[in-house]
Image (cartoon, rainbow, N blue to C red; front, side, top):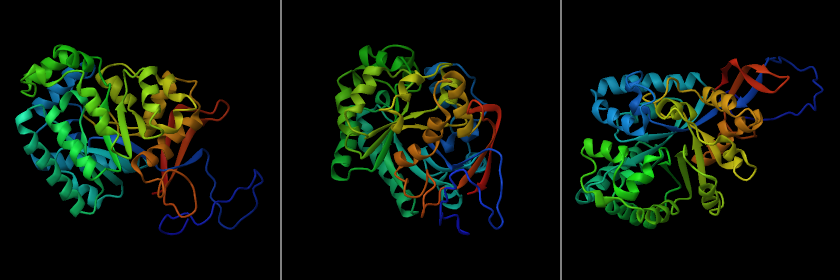
Length: 374
């Protein structure tokens, strides 16, 4: 690598190490910098505030009550979170934002962010206003030279009118990449079936769901039409995703990426997706990892997410986990020309993972990441 971290050569010794000038030897595995495909940097001030295992309805209710804080507190916590990710070897992040609170941090930090400006609203009469606010926020990121796109929060939190506005926008200017919270809770289908259930109650309690007719199953085709306008779409969480669901998305030939956030899943639902479903040869190229926010996780560490997956699905090989943590995330965010693999001309960073059980090729409880080149 040169002084700017750009790879100028990759040498394959074939296992026969030759004596060279100034070699450095490490005990562990060298991997490219990690990609965190899903985070909420602006929720970092909620670290340790929300009780775990309350389910998605309880989590939404809690965030709705305590989310707002003074800007200084939000920015201070977000800056600390950004620094934590940097120390943990994360070089690129897909970040959900509802404000410009973290814009300056993203401008001045070392991590490359793609910001998903999140659309959230069930009031049909406010769709124009909500979309206009999102457009202005995206413009703020554009003006700062930061990549951003407007993206829906979830199928149960976007009104028909807002889906229509989004579809029209995507038609005229198709985004390269978008994101959506996907099948994170079993209550999602309840709210689409009859407007009832714990999730519907939580949304009503927060003043978000006023008319029960706002949502129904016929909104699903509208959602799919919208998502398919983007070159790539990140489906985040997938806690209740089935094999039939995966088959449906596979027909779109690589357009959909599945982001697993196991630490957050355990914190909120105390449940993980069916991890074995995502490790098939057909799907493994489109799986990436995220940490979610510090409101729903204790750490912002991709290595810790890998440990959780390995603990609950030991049959998934370490090499595949490494790919999920690096190259797949870079492809999902459209930055594979810079990150994700050791190739000439790239600036992926170099992480050293120590504490490897080389006999079984597994991470251990003592595995750590040390940043060698950022």
